[in-house]
Length: 250
Image (cartoon, rainbow, N blue to C red; front, side):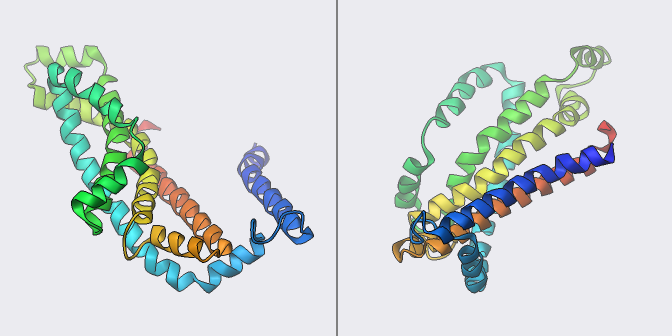
């Protein structure tokens, strides 16, 4: 049984390793020109060489992402509770939330920079607009998953709507909330980088723009890998936090 579990866990790493080997062979053989696709070895060297500079830009991107996630969680809780309490508001606001997700992020970013400037505020607002929807929908799904018989029982015992929310709906929405957080945490990094592409002094998006203009594609791949690793690490962190908080679910 343990052998099978090890195989399942090792399979993705083996597949990634094979991709890197094929990539390296294609680059070394000259089948694909080095300026178009730098080899993994060159990418690693570029990453090590620019590591202090990457950390310098990473600090700003993480600050923007965490600020955006924090504000998104607060807004999501407020909107989800209000929408759950008042059916009319739910019917009026929910379609607008759906429509808001059809607008490309890259189209909103220039407007936010025009309205709020090149500072952190425009980046945080873009992240909030990106992350607000999945968290809110996850909370609403969690609220709706409460056992109806439990709600009827609490109402028959004289429980108020606030008490039902506190003791029934909020606890039942925890797992749904973490599902939305896993999506939003990766969106927050992407949203921060996209907003930095279009204007800013620091951040991984600014770094990507500069190395792209200098045709340093090895450095461009290095920051892409850093963003991917960062997103995966944050998703894993959310999963570990979920396991710790939701021990009673086991």
